[in-house]
Image 1: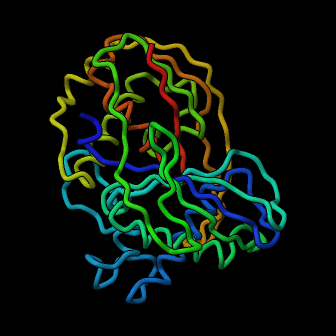
Image 2: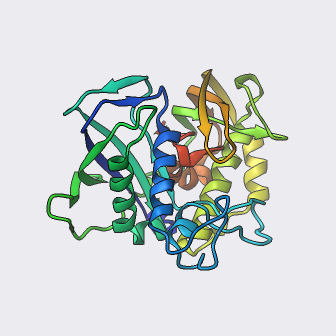
Image 3: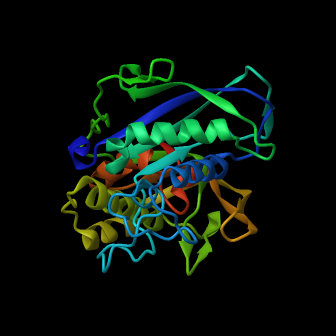
Length: 310
């Protein structure tokens, strides 16, 4: 079952502006950066250039934000361990929240991220209190709710500081087979080849499906402690036979990297992508991808989609 493959939780945070809070067109990088600075402030040792410290096995900043690499992993080469969270920013659009206005965004947690929920919550609360955005607007955390199939469950009210008992929730996919699925990309999907993002006309069903499969398998292995027994060669052959129709467009956004001291333009595709063929073997990964996202910069919330099964 998918739920056993990798327990996940999507947490819905509601905050209230305590001063004018300026939101860029895409707030994922802003929220993630503020989260990292707050985790760094809570760490037991100083860090140099964001690198893991001597206590990296227990340091919250290292384990959640700048985790050291895994040597020789079979699925992917990477400089850092895939992080156990995804920031899902508020809806696209530049705007300013005035005092008293509320804002909602989500955080997906798995693995150690789930176990460190109080610490994650504290870091986000302190990040918001310290100030985020171009004008360092401050905000107060009002509530943390867990998304469940039955609705939202309040798991933390900062007013009393308590955390209610709750369990990770990932509903298992209903179908074991499907001949058609549609992915509706809410945030830009950035699939890369040789370090360059692929435009809509160069994307293929195989590139998408195998990216989803690799992401799900890697996260399940690293953060769920159980690598799925998927035959990647067979999945690759099946993906080659998948047909598609698409209504995709390119969406750019920029982010400021404090570490690299530069501004970067990060684009990807948004819109609808319909796949047709023997898709049953891909359903577990496609289902998980609605929480994990797919492609590059998922920690900023990129590559988020909703799945519709025909």
